[in-house]
Amino acid sequence: MSRYRVSVHIVPRKGLLDPQGKAVSDALHALGFNAVTDTRIGRYIVLDMAADSAAAAEVLVREMCDKLLANPVTEDYQIASSVTV
Image 1 (cartoon, rainbow, N blue to C red):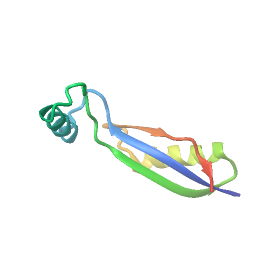
Image 2: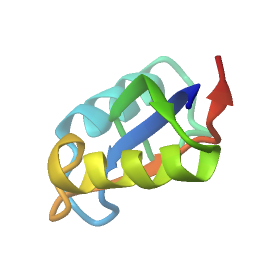
Image 3: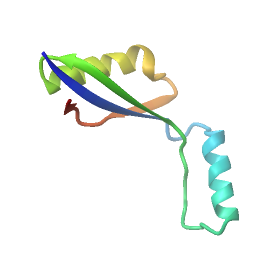
Image 4: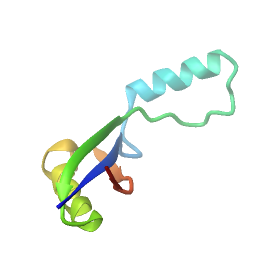
């Protein structure tokens, strides 16, 4: 088994209210950053784990996201490429 570091980005689904994102977007506009059209606030999770391959690590992380880390009704997630550590 090899050790992998896998990153997961979790954000609210498009179309759902994101009060934190709205507040940050409004604040950015108030500071003159009018180029910002949308802001989504989410979570960034880094997992160190053991797996037989990078593909196996990704499968395990996808299961973790589906069962615990992300709410499938209100959130989307992206898994970054795993890195051997």
